[in-house]
Picture 1: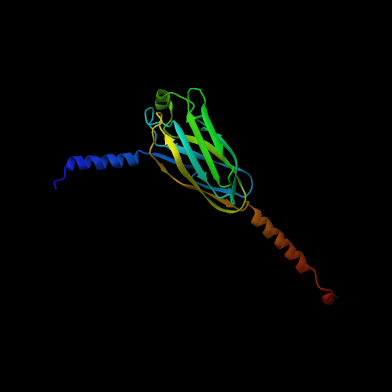
Picture 2: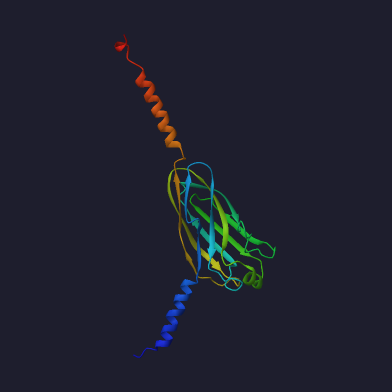
Length: 201
């Protein structure tokens, strides 16, 4: 069997370029370290779309999983904090919904009502789909994963994406160990200064 080297090289190159230039879903920051008090936010992002050209994003239906023993979901905000909602570029609105009723599982859905031309020419190539606010519940590490139910381009056709997981690490409150140590040292000093009655003169 004779191989057509130029065609084979072209196919390999095309596959390599499609992998390098493919869209990626992930979290920002990808690894979050937070104290065990207060709230914090993580953005679910997409990158690697076309810059002023197709492919752009027109619809997504995603599931985010996390450890409900480590963190609790507080709120969901669609859109990018700096760029606005990149699936609502013309102000027509978009259809959004989320379901976090099951601890540790969050479903996110958005469908753009913008035209194909607006999405392809005006949408940024990287942006936050939504911002997730969490509350720490216990110290430990929670994986953050995203599963794709549906993701489509401006025409609604399937869009190939790679998925990059993230993590949340909840650590003890800063200074908590220092305060506990100081209290323990103070108690030790006070106890050591008190002499038993049998030793008093």
